Length: 197
Ligand SMILES: [Zn+2]
Image (cartoon, rainbow, N blue to C red; front, side, top):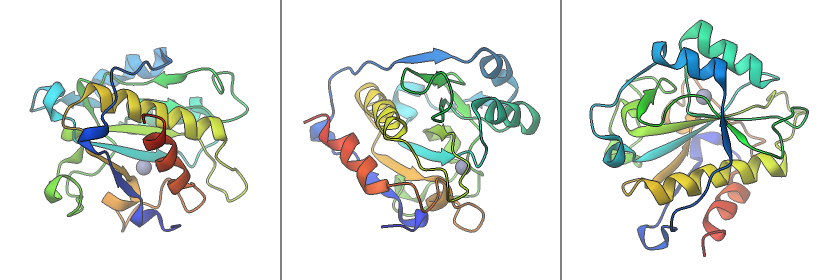
């Protein structure tokens, strides 16, 4: 599977893990910007979360992704650092509070296989941004895959209605291709699902 528009797997309720720790640190600049580029969720966060959306930055650094967040009022809940950054191998950056809806998918986007084709995905999803140049030459690292899987497992344990993991491209195929053809989706899915058994 290499077309990002097809990237989706579902989280079986019977395999939901017990509480799962997440090694995260708050990114101060992103967190400070978050009130201006997130909104209140219309449903209580504990029940609201149905999906996780996987993005890649098409940029070279965590700082670049945070500057986009500040300048363009786009946002996401976590950032997964690239190989040449200090956080890589250690922890993921928390960039916006989970209880807030981050702005990472256009409101008119949807997919019939994701939460019954509902729109306004930001209200019922969490967003993960993986730092990757998407140039074709920048491979996603094993740690980036594992760290992203850890975030999904953490959220899967925490949110009882979380059922879908999808690419941004699946929800917005006309405008977006991230996380890109080079993202090893099946390996990522296997890491996420296998680790809880
Ligand atoms: Zn995206």
